[in-house]
Length: 78
Length: 178
Image 1 (cartoon, rainbow over the protein chains, first blue to last red):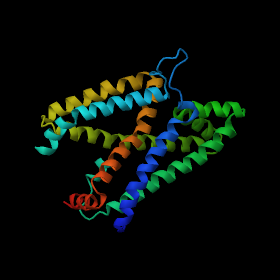
Image 2: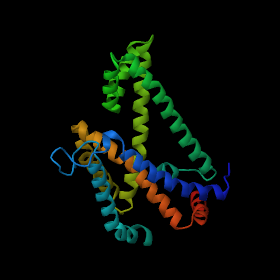
Image 3: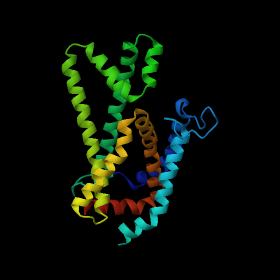
Image 4: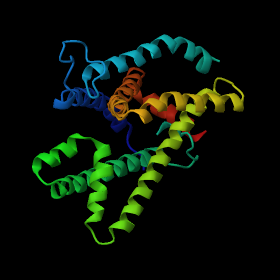
């Protein structure tokens, strides 16, 4: 089965919008919408807290950005 | 998916296989959801108990509701054994690409096979132990990186969009056929 090129291009761009919407939707659910604990601290250890989710994503993205140049030189350029 | 696709044969239709994979996975998920929700409400003593089961997460549904369900149907023992065997096979077959993906990345560091194996086993023990020890930690990681898959997909999509999707599609198809 061969899909037309136009479909591929359309699917890529529409899925970016869908991705952002899905992230917003997941993080706005009642059980995950907490950012701060009862004492007003950043709720890093809440099982489903947005604070924990965003912090861990941010940490991994930061590590990825820091290692990006090294990984490119190590695996792609060589 | 990327790991599995790297084992594709020359004559495989990547678009069709991806479509079938995504369609099959989503269909199975929807059917499971439609089966489990009525089962929870039918087996719980009250609506409040049913909701508490649902809020307890996937583990409670799998290891509490499913055994209760099979205990109430004819031939439930046999069906229960088949279900949990299938669950084990599904979990194991999901684990293999994860191991392979990590193994390939470590192997790219040009380590010896022995060192690669040691690194992979050590990482699995170190990063897997907290989830085995604490159900809260497991639930947190399941949630954070389950939703995180959307973020990963977004990065790939943005990368593809920024680099013009059409030539990239041709490159991917050429690479797959090598």
